[in-house]
Length: 249
Figure: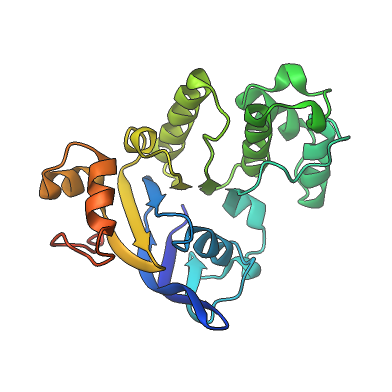
């Protein structure tokens, strides 16, 4: 399964440094939460991972290759970054078929992922008629089309009702249990804490900590990820010993 490595990743926009020398590794079989305030650099980091923006310095690689050099990217990385990308007049099935055919994915896979995300009964409805939660599920279906080794999800729980959030948690845990790499950006820290194995916290584009959740909570002597996050980002500097996540053999 895919190993994702961020090495000295830096992105500058003229006088603004959006991401500053980020270095960390995402291991297969783990759900990693990506946490930071608005403007912390999370979206830029994810865009660099997906080849949507070119780093000013450093690299992001997937099994040693940048995204643009992957021979079959949808089968390696499934990404969910914007639930509003679908043409509102396309049905859910047709929207996914267009993506599948461009990636040489057989049509039957479309119905498989619609069933997997709970949209089989809405396959003939137009995307423009969907609620926010249904659009989230459709975007997740698109990410799953290639049965990817890695999932990269930006705020996947937005718009989901409590039942949907519970379902999503189970899906992400099952993906990791199969050995896949799961990287999830979210502001819903209480929910995220129930799902993730590891957490990456950034502030002002800089890495604050990358640790297993259990170790982070134990070292901080805090009861919640929210409390730890607020304590860590108060100064914008690493404040807990052992900040880098140790490489696993």
